[in-house]
Image (cartoon, rainbow, N blue to C red):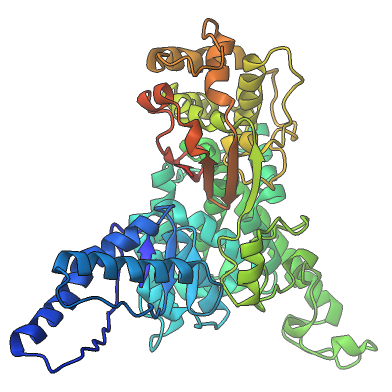
Length: 555
């Protein structure tokens, strides 16, 4: 049984056992058969849908056993079906809250697919029943590489933005080279789709000279990209997979594709201009030089060509072929140590401590539940800041920032972070500056609550002279769309730009997020009729300039 992100619940089968005090006539038996069919066709699905609080979530339950329902034979069919569906619905609701091997929960279908890929790379098919139940390819009796290729090819069409968080998680888990080998040319095609979906253009064939902005973007990727860190760790030992000058055009395309994905991970808005294609070239060229140097160093250590053995070395560690020696680039990062499930924790970026877990997450981990989707979460009083993502998109901010890296800075996320803090400061001009790591500010930048402040890096070459103009653009959209008819009973008169902004942005929220996915949960009592009429609290969905899916929900 599956319910959540699908339009309707999916019920594999329903088994009903009737206990009657006497032998049934043929019409009476036919009535019972018709009741069982009618239950599965309508009332049961309705009862299950009523349980779902988050329509994005996928809940897979292998089986449940409902308590017996006792009714009189004279009970009408409609009443019997209603009571029966409610009885089963209660059993499902209880099972969905349980933490055992027969229940698997994912924040979304994309998280389900990521868990499938990570698990198959680790040789784990224990949740294959849940993946199939969620509508993903059959993972039992099929080669894992074929299943993974099918999933990647499907999501490249259905949800291209899914590819970046997938490769981030795989890179953090240390399985990037295996995934690249499994996917082959499918990876290049999927990256092309994701790149165009984000608003980028195909890389220029002519190589332009690198400039300060190109160097800054490449340096940002090398410093902050989990994908490129995985490439850099793997390239020396897996030259045939990653180094573009080692095995012809296909490998070269793979290296460039991973560089493009790294840019989409760190600075997705940069894909809109030619700066990104030049940065891709710079990254791949540097990778090739590193790979060449690493091969030369290994050959030098044994005093002969790569692959030969130095029989005269006094070091016992050098009696093995160089490919088997421990290379510094291949040493396990402390942050990549295997988690409870036996594989590296994909939710733990290098250099960070354990991120917060809820009690349900800890319970799930003890029962072998998937680690995918155990996202970081935190609360903020400025949750309404995210309602300004749509107005910001309408102003053309991302395009202006991408076209002027010298003014706005190479990092669009950094520029968005500065704008977010300026918006809050305008809403409460007499208050202290907002915390740059406030969860709502980070989410406005497309980052989860445990991320670093993207504004820290001094990546711009000119002062922030653009901030006032961008604030005015956002306010213009807000004044156009937001018509205040309800004073909310709190004495807040909307007479100035500050009071208008405050009406929107001061809104408690619980921010939940991981790679490529942000959810903001608001109290149902805080629904604002005027904000809703203006469409500000509608899901932004995929935000290309941030490379993240943003969802809102009231609970």
